[in-house]
Length: 273
Image (cartoon, rainbow, N blue to C red; front, top):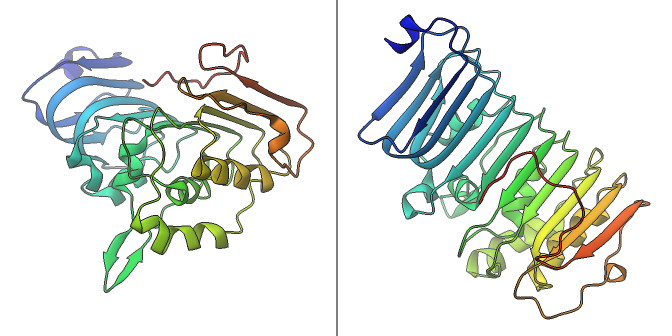
């Protein structure tokens, strides 16, 4: 009814709505922006509208799919930190929705949902490809099962990445059994190059082993990196020196800042808490 009455509607925001169940966006050729914030009890979002280019979503949503190929270019998926999202339903549908995205912000809940499936005594990585992604922001919220291989595997599926923002959060990455038995070997054998990466910014850096391992990998495989920015964790008591890191590129700008003293002036397009 809304779309039939408002034929030139370009933006729709749903905030703190309840008992929606299944939400289908359909019937408006002018709609470009869809925002869903703080809505509970949404089991499925179906985008049946090829004109939408901006999709920002936070809260607890189990499934997201599209009917026709989308032109989504600007996406935030800030899923809530609940256990139910560690195995996102219909994850192939979700990655199909994201295949044309250019600016993407996600948190660790999405990466946990894309984690390998254990089949016939083997961990099988999910296959997907984001060929147009230019900027990625990844934020770790609270305690997380995400390890360096999860992050590296996602980024290497984005060959056009130019700007990468990693927020390690307040908690350390855990070197659990999956990392030690499976993921560590995959990480160390990876030969991916980040030929388009120009800007790399890390927040919440605590100078811990897995953080340093991931940071060094990117620096050693981004030969055209131009700017490196490291922002310390608020609980960090160790001195962070840029001389501790080795990069294969001639970085023109490199700097470190305290947690509350980020004066870099370089921030991701999206603000994700």
